[in-house]
Image 1: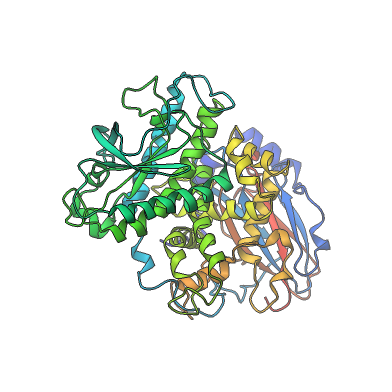
Image 2: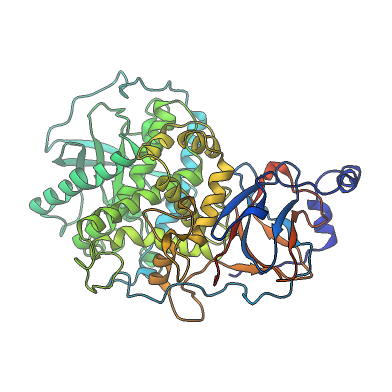
Length: 581
């Protein structure tokens, strides 16, 4: 689905969205235009940027002309609004001819080699996994609203602490199944402790089907989660709580998890490889709670006795990335709700951090195997071992970049453009992590309040609007074609990732669609037409000034010329494009 560059709105819609009474609108019009807050944009040199806060009731920004070229990024930098589209006008007061640049310009690097053979990356992300994850996180938020237990002590351990179990011991668990429907069904199972590492205990359901891991293979499997994956999460996000006092996180492998995915959807929608359920923390409130930190996983089921046929190699390939993802959710819930007695993290921030967790799995193998090592094709961007961790954030960020003005990072709706918002949330949190100390993500896990408050606190008091503006620029200005990467200021680049390179390698082609660089850039033309932007969204525009006109006034307003609602935090980020861009 494509978003048009300009949408002509009906009079009734404009009246409904202009805000305030006719008297208020009239007063605004009579008061005359007001400049958005910020340093003079006329002073921008090539590859310099400035941010203008229009939440002060301002609608204008002064720009120098004389043939200069600008990237103008319009934003509504908030997570405190609905996802409803907001009509706006972005125009220059001097007639600008139709620019040479077309909407959705195909600017990007030449196509690279394949991403990661032999699996088709486009077909390897499970929509069912995402749906279940979204449902359980929404369920956790509801659960957290009704719990009455006090926060844990600083040690993270309540009075009912128990001794670590013995290897080979059997205990019962309540396992959620039927999780694709709106009706929860629980199954009580017995599981044997088959692996005990320093931080992870692996229990296997006593009725797991034949053809699963051998004892030696299960030992290696457990070591991988205990010694590689668990430290990746805890180093970045902090250690979880320990409500059962066993000093470990439990990984429960049960065919009940397999049963939750209908066999009819295995080939088309994938399957649920694992999940975390925040209900397990609230032992006093729910008889189905297991009273501990638990990650639920599928078991190997080669014959498909309980659901989708899954070999041990399939489990080994799919579950690790899901574990990293779900462990971040577990850590986040533990820190916010269990340890601090606060509401869960905002959904967009929680999900974005879980994609960061997956990405950190890819980064682990990238560090182990710098190019061209460990690649079936030496030209691959990622080593083969990183492919399972890279696919989600790569694809989601590409889909987000196709429609950044229609997909909100902070006020998302899964019903609009699918799960593309997750890619935007990952990109924003990745950029934030690139420009903050190594403790940034851990500080986010412990910060309370809404997403804006948490990010400002974890970033040392920097204004959310400024951070969001620089991120929006960085998606475009990092690695401008044909120029050194350092051409753009450091704040307008990523440090650990290169979006242009990633997207060009992922889906790049020399023309047509998909584009090697998917961000749509709308050309300012005369006469201007109204467009739409979602709160938490970003719209990219290009202004090419005429050689004979020395000054321009850029107007960012509601379609009738009145200021946009300050509660939406309207702002402009402007970057003067270097010659040739």
